[in-house]
Image (cartoon, rainbow, N blue to C red):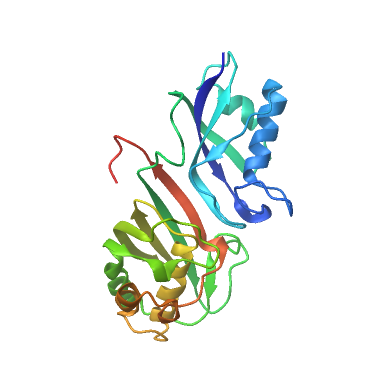
Amino acid sequence: MSERFLLTIEYDGTHYSGWQRQLNGPSIQQEVEHALHRLTGQRAAVTGASRTDAGVHALGQCAHVDLDVSIPPDKLPFALNTLLPRDIRVLQGERVGPAFHARFQARGKEYAYRIFNRRHPSALRRHFAAHVALPLDDAAMARAAQDLVGTHDFAAFQAAGGTAKTTVRTITSAALTREGDELLLTIQGNAFLYNMVRIIAGTLIYVGLHKLPEDAFARAIETGDRLLLGPTAPPQGLCLNRVYYEGEAL
């Protein structure tokens, strides 16, 4: 008898076309489904909480899958990790109810965006941070980020191709910290639009370079004008840290 399992997955998205199965290259979903097929003999569809783009990483992607197996859920990660590429790892497995949905029942998500800020790029961090060579005004960026907090219509923050039925979202926190040459944006919210975090990161970089005013976010929220924001930042700086479900505080 088939049961539903929730998997927590970490991955380096550098060499993948994103989470979702694609025709133009390998995806995280495809690799996990392939490993499950090798392990169980079943062709099971894996449904992720977030459809991360090509080059984007995850520390805590969540996905559900229906399986007819006798393997205890806490042993599933060990079995799957012997069959997955080294840049994808299942960290946790648990049984959930048959109606549970990893995407639709998510209460919120936390993303991080890393900016490597020095004159020369990093050989070691090139896949995990966006490089900005010129000095950034951290204080201006941190002040600007506070205009994101709250419930707003983020219509200006959605890239072309987004299919959300509503563009109203609630951001519960947006914090910017620096450690040496690395700036880290950590942002939590109930949901995010297509490329929203990368548009936020690109705008913050422009604020830090004094190419945009500190109230750029406030103006874009008020007017819905995408042209008031900065460019979409590169994918490699983005990481899905965590997905929140019922009973977990944002």
